[in-house]
Image 1: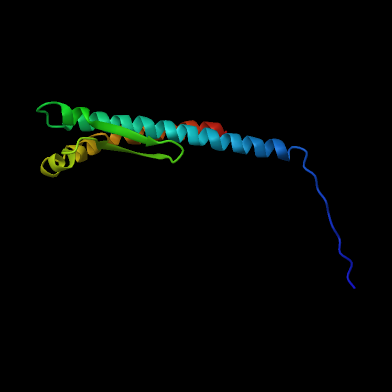
Image 2: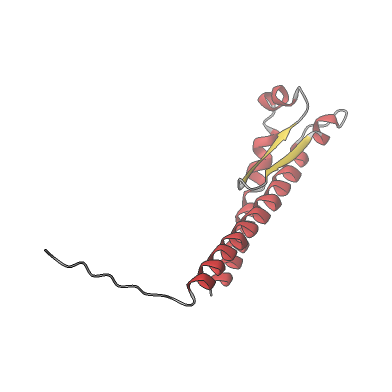
Length: 119
C-alpha cells in the first residue's frame, strides 16, 4: 500500500491579496461605468443636435438610460413618433456617428486610469 503524503502551505498575505483584487475589480467597474455614463451623455447631446425641431418635443425626448451594474446603456427617443421620424431622417444615427471620436477618447481615458491602478 502506498502511503499518502500531504503538504500544507499557508500564505500569510493571501487574504490581503484577495481583498485587494476584489477592491480593484470594483475600481475597474467604477471607471468603466463612468465612461459609459459620459459616453451616453455625449451621444445624447449629439443626437439632440441632429434632431429636426418643430415643437422641440422630439429633441427634448431623447434620453440616456445607463444600466447600472450591467456596464451598458441606451440613448433613445421617448416620444411615440421618434422612430417614424428617424426612418425618414436618421438623426439618431448621425448623432451616434458624430460622437464616435468623443466616445473613443472617453474610453481611452478610462483605460489609462485603470492601467494606472494596476501599477
